[in-house]
Image (cartoon, rainbow, N blue to C red; front, side, top):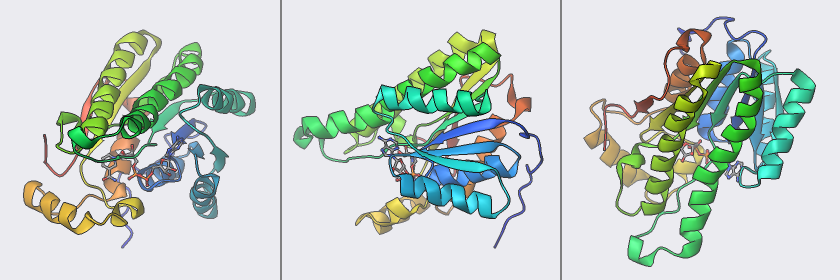
Length: 256
Ligand SMILES: NC(=O)c1ccc[n+]([C@@H]2O[C@H](COP(=O)([O-])OP(=O)(O)OC[C@H]3O[C@@H](n4cnc5c(N)ncnc54)[C@H](O)[C@@H]3O)[C@@H](O)[C@H]2O)c1
C-alpha cells in the first residue's frame, strides 16, 4: 500500500541534502522523502552499491539524487565529500546522519574492537559529518542537522557500546544546537525504536526483538522506515527553524 505523504510539497525545492548511511534502510527511505519534497539528495554510504541503488530508485521516480561513497570514520573522506557538494551545488541545507550499526555483547565479554568500532562509526563519524557540514551551513546562515540516535541511548543490557555511542550522539547534537543556533542552524536527534529494515531482519534474534517491541510499545506494531522518514521530513522543513536540541523518539511509545 502506498501511503500518501501528508507532508508532500515542493517546500525543499532548490535545497541540497546529504544523507550518510544513505544506502541503508532508514537513510534511503528518509532521503527519498526529502527528494520527494524537492531537495537534491546526496546518498552517501560506505557501500557505494547501496547508495547508488537508493539514488537510482529516487531518480526513477523523477527525483533529483546522486550517490557517493563515504567512510564516516575517516575525516578526510567526510571533508572531501562536503567540499565536493560545495563545488557542485554551492550549498548544503540538510544533513541526516543515518550511518551506524550495533555490535552487541555483555560488558564483561566486550572486546576493545567491539567498543572502538561502534564508538568510531556511530559517535566519531557523526562528529566528523557535523563538523564538515556545519562549516558550510554557518557560512550560509541556514541548516538542518538531523542525527540518528536510538531508543537505546537510555541504556540497554548487552549494548554498552551502542548505548554509550547513541547517548553521545544526543549530547553532541544538543551541543551543536546551542553552538549554532545563532547561525540559524538547527540540530535535532531522532531516537528510533525497533524499525523493520533488511539488516535487522537478518539478525537471528529478529523474531524475539519483534515480539518484545510489540509487547513493550504502546503502539502494537514494529516501526517502518516511513515512520522515521516522516520525522526527518518534519525536522528538515524550513518551518521548523525554532525547534532545536530536541530528541524525537520514533518508537511507538516505548521509552527507556
Ligand atoms: N533499524 C532500527 O531498528 C534502528 C533503531 C534505532 C537506531 N537505528 C540507527 O539508525 C541508523 C540507520 O540504521 P538502519 O536500520 O538503516 O541500518 P542499515 O544497516 O540498513 O544502514 C546503515 C548504513 O550505514 C552504512 N555504514 C556503516 N558504516 C559506515 C561508514 N563507516 N561510513 C559510511 N556509512 C557506513 C552501512 O553501509 C549501511 O548502509 C543506524 O545508526 C542505526 O544504529 C536503527
